[in-house]
Image (tube, rainbow, N blue to C red; front, side):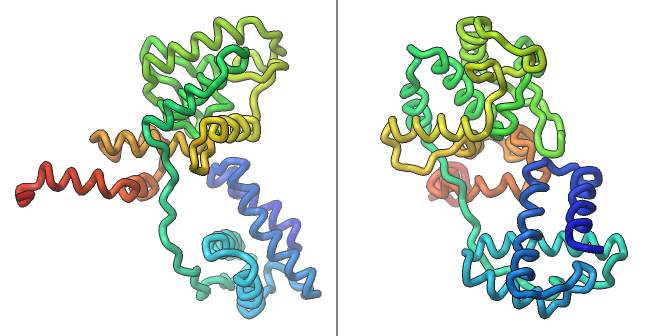
Length: 299
Protein backbone atom coordinates (compact mmCIF):
# COMPACT_ATOMS: atom_id res chain seq x y z
CA UNK A 1 0.00 0.00 0.00
CA UNK A 2 1.40 3.40 -1.00
CA UNK A 3 0.77 6.72 0.75
CA UNK A 4 -1.74 8.06 -1.79
CA UNK A 5 -3.92 4.96 -1.55
CA UNK A 6 -3.67 4.94 2.25
CA UNK A 7 -4.78 8.58 2.50
CA UNK A 8 -7.63 8.01 0.06
CA UNK A 9 -8.89 4.98 2.01
CA UNK A 10 -8.50 6.78 5.34
CA UNK A 11 -10.49 9.80 4.14
CA UNK A 12 -13.27 7.50 2.95
CA UNK A 13 -13.29 5.87 6.37
CA UNK A 14 -13.51 9.26 8.12
CA UNK A 15 -16.39 10.31 5.87
CA UNK A 16 -18.43 7.10 5.81
CA UNK A 17 -17.68 5.45 9.15
CA UNK A 18 -17.11 8.49 11.37
CA UNK A 19 -19.27 11.03 9.54
CA UNK A 20 -16.71 13.84 9.77
CA UNK A 21 -17.10 17.09 7.85
CA UNK A 22 -15.04 17.86 4.73
CA UNK A 23 -13.05 20.47 6.68
CA UNK A 24 -12.12 18.00 9.43
CA UNK A 25 -11.16 15.34 6.89
CA UNK A 26 -8.99 17.85 5.01
CA UNK A 27 -7.16 18.76 8.24
CA UNK A 28 -6.41 15.10 8.95
CA UNK A 29 -5.04 14.80 5.43
CA UNK A 30 -2.72 17.79 5.95
CA UNK A 31 -1.09 16.12 8.97
CA UNK A 32 -0.28 13.02 6.93
CA UNK A 33 0.98 15.10 4.00
CA UNK A 34 3.43 16.87 6.35
CA UNK A 35 4.94 13.49 7.16
CA UNK A 36 5.09 12.50 3.46
CA UNK A 37 6.82 15.78 2.57
CA UNK A 38 9.37 15.26 5.34
CA UNK A 39 10.09 11.71 4.14
CA UNK A 40 10.60 12.98 0.58
CA UNK A 41 12.89 15.84 1.68
CA UNK A 42 15.00 13.40 3.67
CA UNK A 43 15.03 10.83 0.85
CA UNK A 44 13.39 8.18 3.00
CA UNK A 45 11.51 5.73 0.82
CA UNK A 46 9.15 3.80 3.07
CA UNK A 47 5.48 2.82 2.85
CA UNK A 48 2.85 3.62 5.53
CA UNK A 49 2.72 -0.08 6.42
CA UNK A 50 6.49 -0.32 6.98
CA UNK A 51 7.45 3.03 8.51
CA UNK A 52 9.12 2.53 11.89
CA UNK A 53 8.66 4.17 15.27
CA UNK A 54 12.22 5.53 15.03
CA UNK A 55 11.48 7.32 11.75
CA UNK A 56 8.27 8.79 13.18
CA UNK A 57 10.22 9.98 16.25
CA UNK A 58 12.75 11.74 14.01
CA UNK A 59 9.90 13.46 12.15
CA UNK A 60 8.27 14.57 15.40
CA UNK A 61 11.61 15.84 16.73
CA UNK A 62 12.25 17.91 13.60
CA UNK A 63 8.68 19.20 13.54
CA UNK A 64 8.98 20.34 17.18
CA UNK A 65 11.61 22.87 16.07
CA UNK A 66 9.27 24.44 13.51
CA UNK A 67 5.83 24.57 15.16
CA UNK A 68 4.40 25.47 18.55
CA UNK A 69 3.44 22.74 21.07
CA UNK A 70 -0.26 23.01 20.22
CA UNK A 71 0.35 22.41 16.50
CA UNK A 72 2.77 19.59 17.31
CA UNK A 73 0.17 17.96 19.53
CA UNK A 74 -2.42 18.18 16.75
CA UNK A 75 -0.04 16.56 14.23
CA UNK A 76 0.74 13.70 16.63
CA UNK A 77 -2.95 13.18 17.29
CA UNK A 78 -3.75 13.21 13.57
CA UNK A 79 -1.02 10.69 12.72
CA UNK A 80 -1.97 8.47 15.64
CA UNK A 81 -5.52 8.29 14.27
CA UNK A 82 -4.24 7.46 10.79
CA UNK A 83 -2.03 4.60 11.99
CA UNK A 84 -4.78 3.34 14.31
CA UNK A 85 -6.89 3.02 11.17
CA UNK A 86 -4.14 0.99 9.44
CA UNK A 87 -3.93 -1.30 12.47
CA UNK A 88 -7.72 -1.66 12.55
CA UNK A 89 -7.73 -2.64 8.87
CA UNK A 90 -4.86 -5.08 9.57
CA UNK A 91 -2.39 -3.31 7.27
CA UNK A 92 -0.07 -2.98 10.27
CA UNK A 93 0.36 -4.87 13.53
CA UNK A 94 1.33 -1.86 15.66
CA UNK A 95 0.94 1.91 15.73
CA UNK A 96 4.38 3.62 15.49
CA UNK A 97 3.03 6.52 17.58
CA UNK A 98 1.80 4.28 20.38
CA UNK A 99 4.58 5.32 22.77
CA UNK A 100 5.04 8.90 21.55
CA UNK A 101 3.59 11.41 23.99
CA UNK A 102 2.09 14.71 22.94
CA UNK A 103 3.63 17.86 24.47
CA UNK A 104 1.82 19.19 27.49
CA UNK A 105 -0.11 22.31 26.57
CA UNK A 106 -2.33 24.57 28.57
CA UNK A 107 -6.00 24.61 27.77
CA UNK A 108 -6.63 27.50 25.40
CA UNK A 109 -9.60 29.51 26.53
CA UNK A 110 -11.77 30.95 23.77
CA UNK A 111 -11.82 34.69 23.11
CA UNK A 112 -15.14 36.29 23.93
CA UNK A 113 -16.86 39.63 23.50
CA UNK A 114 -18.78 41.41 26.22
CA UNK A 115 -22.47 42.12 25.61
CA UNK A 116 -21.63 45.78 24.98
CA UNK A 117 -18.93 44.81 22.46
CA UNK A 118 -21.39 42.60 20.59
CA UNK A 119 -23.84 45.51 20.47
CA UNK A 120 -21.06 47.86 19.31
CA UNK A 121 -20.02 45.53 16.48
CA UNK A 122 -23.57 45.19 15.22
CA UNK A 123 -24.18 48.95 15.57
CA UNK A 124 -21.11 49.55 13.36
CA UNK A 125 -22.82 47.91 10.35
CA UNK A 126 -23.72 50.38 7.60
CA UNK A 127 -27.43 49.79 7.09
CA UNK A 128 -27.61 52.27 4.20
CA UNK A 129 -26.18 49.54 1.95
CA UNK A 130 -28.21 46.45 0.95
CA UNK A 131 -25.63 44.07 2.40
CA UNK A 132 -25.95 45.88 5.73
CA UNK A 133 -29.30 44.24 6.53
CA UNK A 134 -27.85 40.87 5.55
CA UNK A 135 -24.72 41.34 7.66
CA UNK A 136 -26.75 42.36 10.71
CA UNK A 137 -28.94 39.27 10.32
CA UNK A 138 -25.85 37.05 10.01
CA UNK A 139 -24.20 38.42 13.16
CA UNK A 140 -27.45 38.18 15.08
CA UNK A 141 -27.77 34.51 14.07
CA UNK A 142 -24.15 33.75 14.99
CA UNK A 143 -24.55 35.36 18.40
CA UNK A 144 -28.12 34.53 19.39
CA UNK A 145 -28.01 30.92 18.13
CA UNK A 146 -24.32 30.10 18.65
CA UNK A 147 -23.80 28.74 15.15
CA UNK A 148 -20.53 27.73 13.56
CA UNK A 149 -19.76 29.82 10.46
CA UNK A 150 -20.27 26.75 8.22
CA UNK A 151 -23.71 26.24 9.78
CA UNK A 152 -24.68 29.86 9.15
CA UNK A 153 -23.71 29.92 5.47
CA UNK A 154 -25.58 26.65 4.87
CA UNK A 155 -28.74 27.74 6.69
CA UNK A 156 -31.80 27.21 4.49
CA UNK A 157 -35.12 29.02 4.43
CA UNK A 158 -36.76 25.63 4.84
CA UNK A 159 -34.79 25.29 8.10
CA UNK A 160 -36.60 28.27 9.66
CA UNK A 161 -39.45 27.37 11.99
CA UNK A 162 -40.20 30.83 13.33
CA UNK A 163 -43.72 30.05 14.55
CA UNK A 164 -42.28 27.33 16.78
CA UNK A 165 -39.33 29.54 17.77
CA UNK A 166 -36.60 27.24 16.38
CA UNK A 167 -34.22 26.84 13.46
CA UNK A 168 -32.89 23.51 12.21
CA UNK A 169 -29.10 23.47 12.04
CA UNK A 170 -26.97 20.94 10.16
CA UNK A 171 -23.69 20.60 12.05
CA UNK A 172 -20.56 18.46 11.88
CA UNK A 173 -21.07 15.06 10.31
CA UNK A 174 -24.41 16.25 8.89
CA UNK A 175 -25.95 15.91 12.34
CA UNK A 176 -29.10 17.98 12.73
CA UNK A 177 -30.24 19.84 15.84
CA UNK A 178 -32.95 22.37 16.65
CA UNK A 179 -31.80 25.63 18.21
CA UNK A 180 -34.11 28.25 19.77
CA UNK A 181 -34.14 31.63 18.02
CA UNK A 182 -34.96 34.93 19.69
CA UNK A 183 -37.80 37.18 18.38
CA UNK A 184 -35.27 39.99 17.78
CA UNK A 185 -33.20 37.75 15.53
CA UNK A 186 -36.33 36.63 13.68
CA UNK A 187 -37.17 40.30 13.10
CA UNK A 188 -33.76 41.05 11.54
CA UNK A 189 -33.87 37.95 9.32
CA UNK A 190 -37.32 38.91 8.06
CA UNK A 191 -36.14 42.49 7.39
CA UNK A 192 -33.27 41.12 5.32
CA UNK A 193 -35.55 38.77 3.40
CA UNK A 194 -38.19 41.41 2.63
CA UNK A 195 -35.94 44.42 2.01
CA UNK A 196 -32.97 42.81 0.27
CA UNK A 197 -33.23 39.13 -0.58
CA UNK A 198 -36.67 39.33 -2.22
CA UNK A 199 -35.29 41.85 -4.72
CA UNK A 200 -32.35 39.70 -5.85
CA UNK A 201 -32.10 37.51 -8.91
CA UNK A 202 -31.40 34.09 -7.45
CA UNK A 203 -30.37 31.03 -9.50
CA UNK A 204 -32.84 28.17 -8.90
CA UNK A 205 -30.25 25.92 -7.26
CA UNK A 206 -29.64 28.54 -4.55
CA UNK A 207 -33.24 29.56 -3.93
CA UNK A 208 -33.41 27.88 -0.51
CA UNK A 209 -30.17 29.32 0.89
CA UNK A 210 -30.89 32.11 3.36
CA UNK A 211 -27.78 34.28 3.15
CA UNK A 212 -26.68 35.25 -0.36
CA UNK A 213 -24.07 37.49 -1.95
CA UNK A 214 -24.88 40.19 -4.52
CA UNK A 215 -24.96 37.61 -7.32
CA UNK A 216 -27.56 35.51 -5.54
CA UNK A 217 -25.13 32.77 -4.53
CA UNK A 218 -24.38 31.43 -1.03
CA UNK A 219 -21.75 33.23 1.00
CA UNK A 220 -18.39 31.58 1.68
CA UNK A 221 -16.61 31.16 5.01
CA UNK A 222 -13.96 33.63 3.85
CA UNK A 223 -16.57 36.30 3.16
CA UNK A 224 -18.02 35.99 6.67
CA UNK A 225 -14.53 36.22 8.18
CA UNK A 226 -13.84 39.36 6.13
CA UNK A 227 -17.13 40.98 7.18
CA UNK A 228 -16.44 40.34 10.87
CA UNK A 229 -12.79 41.42 10.66
CA UNK A 230 -13.67 44.71 8.94
CA UNK A 231 -16.40 45.47 11.47
CA UNK A 232 -14.04 44.76 14.38
CA UNK A 233 -11.44 47.16 12.95
CA UNK A 234 -14.04 49.83 12.26
CA UNK A 235 -15.53 49.56 15.75
CA UNK A 236 -12.11 49.90 17.41
CA UNK A 237 -12.39 46.69 19.44
CA UNK A 238 -8.87 45.64 20.42
CA UNK A 239 -9.42 41.90 20.26
CA UNK A 240 -8.94 39.17 17.67
CA UNK A 241 -12.52 38.76 16.48
CA UNK A 242 -13.73 36.01 14.14
CA UNK A 243 -17.16 34.51 13.41
CA UNK A 244 -16.38 31.84 16.01
CA UNK A 245 -15.99 34.56 18.65
CA UNK A 246 -19.76 35.07 18.51
CA UNK A 247 -20.29 31.36 19.20
CA UNK A 248 -17.95 31.52 22.20
CA UNK A 249 -19.69 34.66 23.44
CA UNK A 250 -23.10 33.00 23.05
CA UNK A 251 -22.05 30.11 25.31
CA UNK A 252 -20.22 32.28 27.82
CA UNK A 253 -23.07 34.75 28.26
CA UNK A 254 -25.58 31.92 28.68
CA UNK A 255 -23.40 30.33 31.36
CA UNK A 256 -22.85 33.65 33.14
CA UNK A 257 -26.60 34.20 33.28
CA UNK A 258 -27.27 30.82 34.84
CA UNK A 259 -27.96 28.50 31.90
CA UNK A 260 -27.46 24.76 32.40
CA UNK A 261 -24.27 23.39 30.83
CA UNK A 262 -26.15 20.43 29.31
CA UNK A 263 -28.57 22.80 27.57
CA UNK A 264 -25.63 24.82 26.19
CA UNK A 265 -24.06 21.56 24.97
CA UNK A 266 -27.22 20.67 23.04
CA UNK A 267 -27.52 24.11 21.47
CA UNK A 268 -23.86 24.16 20.42
CA UNK A 269 -24.08 20.64 19.02
CA UNK A 270 -21.13 19.33 21.04
CA UNK A 271 -20.92 15.53 21.17
CA UNK A 272 -19.10 15.58 24.51
CA UNK A 273 -19.87 17.70 27.56
CA UNK A 274 -16.11 18.09 28.10
CA UNK A 275 -15.96 20.27 24.98
CA UNK A 276 -18.60 22.56 26.43
CA UNK A 277 -16.93 22.62 29.85
CA UNK A 278 -14.19 24.91 28.51
CA UNK A 279 -16.66 27.75 29.05
CA UNK A 280 -16.67 27.14 32.79
CA UNK A 281 -13.06 28.38 32.79
CA UNK A 282 -13.69 31.58 30.87
CA UNK A 283 -14.96 33.87 33.60
CA UNK A 284 -13.69 32.82 37.02
CA UNK A 285 -14.81 36.15 38.46
CA UNK A 286 -18.41 35.22 37.70
CA UNK A 287 -17.97 31.80 39.30
CA UNK A 288 -16.48 33.36 42.42
CA UNK A 289 -19.56 35.57 42.72
CA UNK A 290 -21.78 32.48 42.49
CA UNK A 291 -19.92 30.87 45.41
CA UNK A 292 -20.18 34.03 47.54
CA UNK A 293 -23.87 34.37 46.78
CA UNK A 294 -25.15 30.82 47.08
CA UNK A 295 -22.77 28.64 49.12
CA UNK A 296 -23.73 28.05 52.79
CA UNK A 297 -20.15 28.88 53.85
CA UNK A 298 -20.18 32.20 52.01
CA UNK A 299 -19.81 34.23 55.22
